[in-house]
Image (cartoon, rainbow, N blue to C red; front, side, top):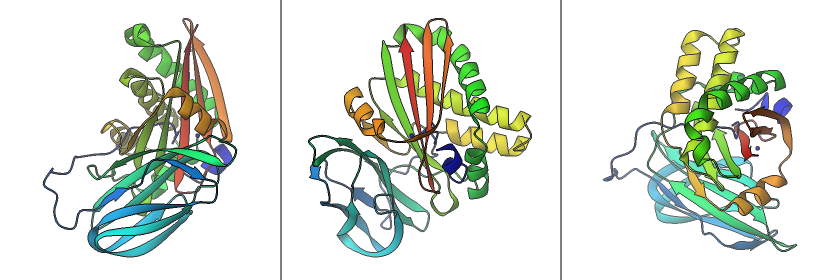
Length: 287
C-alpha cells in the first residue's frame, strides 16, 4: 500500500473501512452502476467498464490516472486504459451526490499476464471529510506516529481476537478523495472481519496521536474517526491470500513498521500513490 508521496495523498491502504449510509435498494433513476469484468489480461490490453446510468457523470479513473466526463445513455462502455503493473486500482463514477465504485486488484500471473479480482458497489456514499483534512491526515503519517498507533491498537485488539487469528493474515485498504470526499474500501486475503477491525483500530489510534500532537483539532479528529468507523467499506475485493500478496508485493512501501505483542507480530505498510489515493497493507503473524 508512500509516506513522502502519501504526504500529499490521503489509506493506510491502511486502512480504513469508511463510508456512510446505504442507498435504498430501489435506487433513483440517476443512480449509477459500474461493472468491470474479472479475467486475466495481457499486459497492454485495454480494460473496459460497463457503466449504467443517465446524463453526465464524472469518471475518476485510477487505472489511467485521470478524470473525465462521460455522457451515459443506459449501459455505456468506457475505456479505462491499460493496467501495466500489479496493484490496487479504484474507479469511481458519479454526479449529483450519487456515486458508484469498482476496485481492481491486479496480480502478476504469467510473464505477460495480470489476473484481476474486482469488487464493485453502488450502495454506499463517501463520508464528508474535507479534502484538506484527509490530505493533512495522510501527510502527517510519520514512522514514529504509525508505530505508536500500531502498538496501541494491537494491545487493545489482541485479547478478544487472538483465538481467531490465523498463522498469517493479510488485508489491505485503499482510500480516495473524490471531489473532496473521503471514502475507503478493503481487499481481503486470508482474514476475517476481526482483522479488518484491527486495521480500523490502527487508523483510529493514528487519529488520536495526531490530535495529541496538535496536527488536527478535536472536531477534526471526531470527523475522521466517524468516517473510519462508519461502515464495512465502500468496495470489497474478496480474494485469496496468495492473490493479495502477489498483487501488493510489487507495490513500493513508503513507510513500514513492525510491532510485537504477546506472540503476535503486526506489520503495517503505507504505500506510494497518486495525490487522491493512499494504500495501506496490514499483515498479522501469529508465532
